[in-house]
Length: 525
Image (cartoon, rainbow, N blue to C red; front, side, top):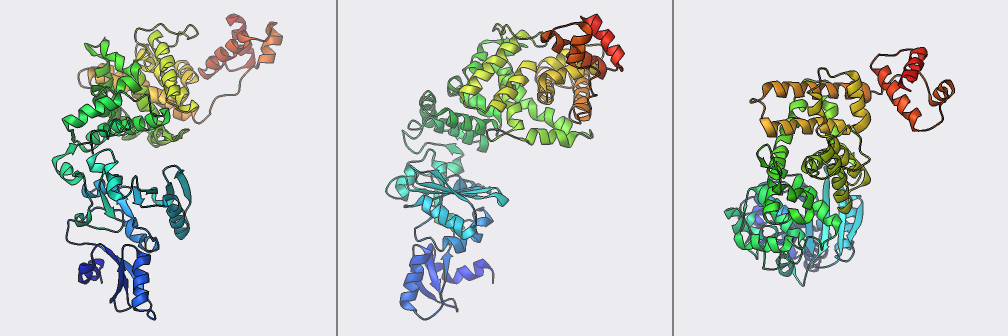
């Protein structure tokens, strides 16, 4: 018997838990599984009973995670009304399956999370003690189950305390159709009208992060922000210095993981970019290639996917390694691709600023200043040290591949020096150089320039994956002690400089013996 065939005769009890006899007679009902079981045992004390939730089949089918049905035996043991709320309900109406499931209940959110975790044999954690929020992690399905006590006296108060109407809907835990949607703020109607609307006048003011979320929802679903809500978002975004830097950082990452060439311009239009990334926002006052630098930055972000796709869909043997590089986890719950996107966002921030005095001649002066500003901002936003260092390297070296296209030949020495300076960030720099070219010239309008850049970037990537990543560097012909003894030099920076130049010459095939290395060292001194 299918689930629908089983539920259909019991539709009189839709929206309730029922205790059933072995022949599917209703012995008792309740708001929870245990309540129905108690009622059933009172009426039929000597008959074994099972507990089921009777979903209302009269509405349109929702797109829900199959995990919910699988968890029915566990949910049947929770003696508090349990509701799926927020984004999971919104996505279910839109036909999208989500893996982040938020549940609201009257009390004991943390206790319920640990109870469910114990029943499933899965780890549970205290997510927010003050808000009585617990989390169960289902690693095998990449799913989080968050259980949180009502914000207020009841579910209606909880939903009215949320940000946007499309996020302020709920359904009983095992509902299956729109007939059981609890929608006190008109979220369903706003979904139909493709509108982003706040729940009430202070929704986006009480928590400025919500303005960023409104931007994300608008771009993610291609919805329009209703004028009154946009005005409230503008006021809220002016207060983005009040939430913790960690929360601002996390929502910024959410924005750049959708379509950053659309989310960030909308954030800027509402005044939020100047509060989060003032160095980037002020680029609107500068021009490059006949357009404001800020508009150019959006064009680069739009071109980044094309640059990445160019190599991932190529027949280069290292394409899978490049993909793994972009997907790699980075300290701070980041990915390699997010670091590349951040590099593209910050690449122009040093325009017009004096470079730090300690920078070398390998970089354009603006890029050295931009790298320093970038690092300062990322530190303030509490990015990890690894992320700060890496994005700084991308910004500082992002023009280098274009500079190499003007050389008569891309030599082994050049490629070695490039990766010696920037390390694995050279891969991101190559991709960003391609995105810059597409944003500036396109591909068809400057074929010779594009071909020259592809030759350089492809050569750099070949060198990295076949030489650097494979660690095929030859053993040094001389060490520092030999240089000091043979040349009569003291320990110090000069020895390091000589060793670097000898390494470059050896990799380039210019020296192959200890005698040749020593002779070159004498010349270099």
